[in-house]
Image (cartoon, rainbow, N blue to C red; front, side, top):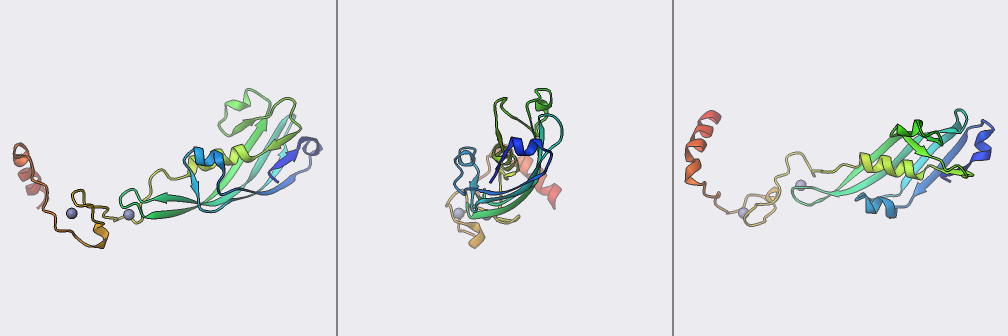
Length: 171
Ligand SMILES: [Zn+2]
Ligand SMILES: [Zn+2]
């Protein structure tokens, strides 16, 4: 369960939370994060003052992406350490790690905090390997599998002096 009853928390005891976010979590999908596995969540809720509740835990999953150069599927394992404050205190809500609790709430759900941290941590651009050669811009061949027969694109004559200078600097 990723929800806890506020009355239980108010008595000052820590409450363990274990649970999962589904692999096809719709809010994560809308945010552009594709998962290869469900998110495994483990943590502990604690009351740390009047109407202030702190959740500390971990969220682990594998994010699915594509190499930005060759489109090979790339899996990125993530393990996040998360600390989130849940409160009705408007001042404390300026902190990006704080989440609102509705005045009439009887329970808190840690799911929004986990989603937010995952969206922030998910890599925007991945490569299948650092030296991925990608596709040939002319014939579309995957250059990781070997060179193609395309001739280098003709360089505009106006840039020839610049190219000559660059070649000189490189040699
Ligand atoms: Zn690649
Ligand atoms: Zn080519």
